[in-house]
Image 1 (cartoon, rainbow, N blue to C red):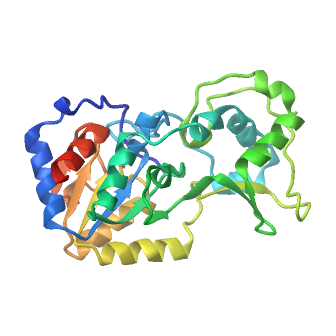
Image 2 (spheres, helix red, strand yellow; image 1 turned 45 degrees about the horizontal axis):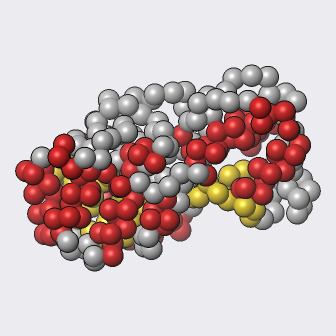
Length: 290
């Protein structure tokens, strides 16, 4: 779905140099109409793994492809079985230091719009209100035939009732509610849409190989085009759906700052780049601006 780069970080402010904080403070103060673009690195401190390492390479096999999910019942069995085991990490996650700091920055008037590549909803739970969920929200499920929406916890309850022995399995949680589980999935029962009786049920998120809905892209592009600056947080920007906004900002002469542990696809476009712990750095930024 949406790759990013970071690692779980110590939240002790002392590991963030004053010089780095000063540079970030100066950037934010100089650009009052700030748009923030976030990736998986803001959620690692909430216990949600990310996809990529500090070099921008995959840490694990690439996630489910949209076409494969839609065309293969076996692929859907594998996806939903792994999700039944792994989604707990996503559903029980709570906003971390980075989410809380970004919500505070919005409340202080420094963040005009927040565009997130994440599907965990933690920005809204932390208090951000002006959020564009670029890749959707994982807690919703959509019928790909009749477009009916359903809460994911309701579907998971049905999956549990139909596949009770799968609840005994355990596996390491992966990004976006996946799990590192490799078994025979052929007996896993996946329901069709309860409304139309035939539709494929899919998380209401953008899988790899699918397109971000045009309305979301247009809203995000409008926000970036109208911004004084763009701040990229916790994203390697290796996927075009996020990288495009850095390109648009750069073409328009809009300054770009980045806070990310590791290489990004847009390193040559940044006015300022800090490779520091994300939660601690944003918390220190808030303290300085408050």
